[in-house]
Amino acid sequence: MKIFYGVQGTGNGHITRARVMARELYAAGIDVDFQFSGRPADKYFDMDIFNGYQVLTGLTFNADHGQVSYFKTAREAKPITFLKDVNGLDLRNYDLVISDFEPVTAWAAKKQKKQVLGIGHQYAFSHKIPRAGSDPIAGRIMKYFAPADITVGLHWHHFGQPILPPIIDTPATPKTVIRNKIIVYLPFEDQHGVIRILSPFKNFEFHVYAPETVPSSHEHIICNPLSRDGFQKDLYDCYGIISNAGFELASESLQLGKKILAKPLHAQMEQISNAAALQQLGYGHVMNELDSSVIEHWLHDKHAVQIAYPNIAKVLVQWIQGGMPEMTTDFIETIWNTVEVTQIND
Image (cartoon, rainbow, N blue to C red; front, side, top):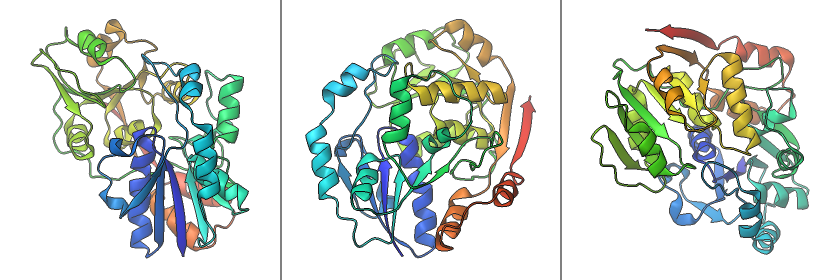
């Protein structure tokens, strides 16, 4: 079997999910070609697992000071380049096309009448899941940005819908946790503002990761460039994480039992909905703005949730090899019955 796999590269969550899928696809002996779009080629990092890949411009969303800017997004879009990429992508020699919300792949397959399998969190929004911050533009983006013929939506909970748990690595539970160590990943915020709001909490050690690092004059605030390995090492033994409300990082944090404080990106329906789901499920705390009082309360709150999710990537690869039969209610229930949720209060 030969697969073409398109991945939205605007956020790191899609790439993280693709790394897990790549490992299982390769282990099954499947030939896969990966394509990424949504950021400049020199901004990708830790990509060795993909055994060579191609990068296209694609479409991306632009944010400014913690809020999606539709004006900036439209101004910096390159529709002619996008159409050229769609028309130039030849998918004739592939048995299956997969899109993780990657628009060039999805629209090229549609144009060539190739069936597309959509795998990702965004595809869960075609079902009745917690939703907030919606508007007509957001709704149309979810529907038409990267259309697929068969979709597999992913979420932290099933909400009574035919969706699956997250695709994440399943590491062992950390033996040692540093109780004052906090990871901060707020890439869409002004990093000087992030440092400023964290500076009073000197009893905690903040490890800040951002696309563009700024110098910190505070010993308890360590600023780091983006690094998959470095981030994972810090995430493994930290006590909690302050981040935007992206799906994949929250999934990893829940798997490891880290407490979560999420600040959703304004005007981004997916992140606002993720924050609503975290609150509804009792899986994390939310702040709509960078708020020192909310941060202080959260820092001293000992409650966290740990969720043991199964290896969904392996399940999906086996399902693909089996011809992608309809996912029955029994099939989905069997998977969710293996999920274990533990409350942590120490």
